[in-house]
Every structure is written in structure tokens, then in C-alpha cells.
Image (cartoon, rainbow, N blue to C red; front, side, top):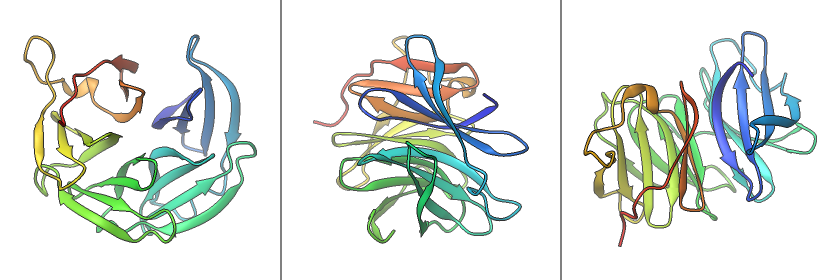
Length: 212
């Protein structure tokens, strides 16, 4: 399916966004077999050269996609037809790198290391905090009640409070090691399971609760 650049779950099935040199394609997957049930080419997703998609989220029956480039955007797509329904300006200083939804708001990670809580109505910033440092680029973000999970591009995964952005802890294996670079990527939660889309494919984790 090419280079996968986003993963989300609609309550029943996983969705992947794939990118190649020609176009982006949105896939609905059978989780048991990892085979596509539906595929929607999105030829109008990228409007100009130098732009790319990074992160998708399921929001009230629609797929939202984060676009980074000359113009940073949040794009709403009809999952039944692949039709682009709406475009909002993404409030990132540089390109967005991941997208998640908490039931009310979008959470957007960015190249600068910042995480934004964004209105789905107008794209306005409702909360912002720095995950790590400006030199640490993130590549995936996922919300779980009280928690924001952020995967670094070159290093560890870290958890923050969704209330105030306070650091809650770094993600480690049962042996105490940080996840290696090849295990990091786009993120989404399916119930209490964390799904990571990385170089290895789709990996399911059952992490401990962090927020009280």
C-alpha cells in the first residue's frame, strides 16, 4: 500500500492513509487479515508541490487529515466516497506531523515539537504545549482519557497530561528500555490498546494507565 503516513480507528475498523510518488490513498482495513476492504484515491488532497500528509483521525463519521507544506491544512474527507468536504488552516508554525481526536477536539503534533488542541469548527488553538524541545520533532500523537502520547521521530515516546501539558512519563518496555526508532511512528488508541504504525507495520501494545 505504499508508504503509510497515518492510522486511525472508527470504532469498528482501522483506516490507513498511504502515500506514493503519484497520489495518496485512504484504505479501510480488515484488522484480522490486514487486507483493504475499501480504497479511496485522493488526487486533490495535495494542492501544491512540497506538501505532504502526516496523520489522520476519525471525527464524527469523517476522516481528518493533517497536511504539511507551503500551506499547513486540516482536511476533512468523506470516508464513503473519498470526497474532500472541508479545508481548515492548520495552526502550526511548521508542518503538522500527527493527528488525534478526543471526542471533542483535535490534537495536532508539529515539527517544532509543540502539541496543539484545535477546534474542529474553525481550526482555532484552544491549548498548546511543548513536547520535549523545539529540536525534537514528533511523528505521531494519540489521545487517551487524560493523556497525550507523542512519538518522537528519532527517539522515545512520551506521555503528557491533556489537561495542562505536564509531563507524565516516558514509555518503556517491561524491561525498562525505550522504544527503538524503528518501533516509533503514527499512533492511535483502540480502546486501551495503542496501535503504532511504524517501519515494522502495525504493532499493538497494551500500555499501563499513566494519568490518575
